[in-house]
Length: 175
Image 1 (cartoon, rainbow, N blue to C red):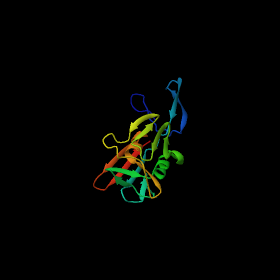
Image 2 (image 1 turned 90 degrees about the horizontal axis):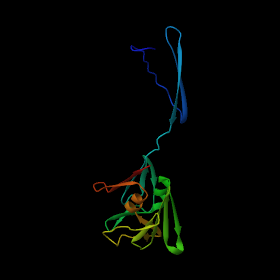
Image 3 (image 1 turned 30 degrees about the vertical axis):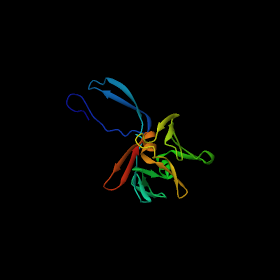
Image 4 (image 1 turned 90 degrees about the vertical axis):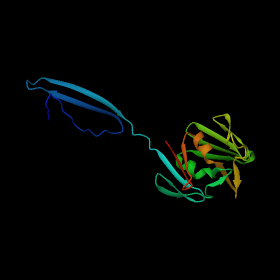
């Protein structure tokens, strides 16, 4: 209904995609005016949040429990983990080239290539030190599983990586 001043408000539920809303106004004399609004509604992408803890095989993705083995481990002051389970939950892929001992992690258009025992990686084709302050931080194979440095890979793919020293927990978040 009309409010003072000739204005009105109404809540309208929008659907994903293009919505057309037509407003028909009629005054007391019977004159009519029409206005059509076009609103393109895009659902915001869900932020993915992965929480892991050093030494624990259980982790959560947006609160849902999952497991990975071996668990995240600390070497050279950096957290390492087997990338496949976490990267796939984030929506990326991990490929292994055995004869090159190379792991390729892809997320969207970003590509990170790492070699076992090598302190440099390629990020979108550019050579970058995995840890500029410590050349001993290198991908490793531990108990038959490829272990990659978590912060380097996560941040190279555009994720936010946070470390909580009290819980020894790692939170990876991003779109």
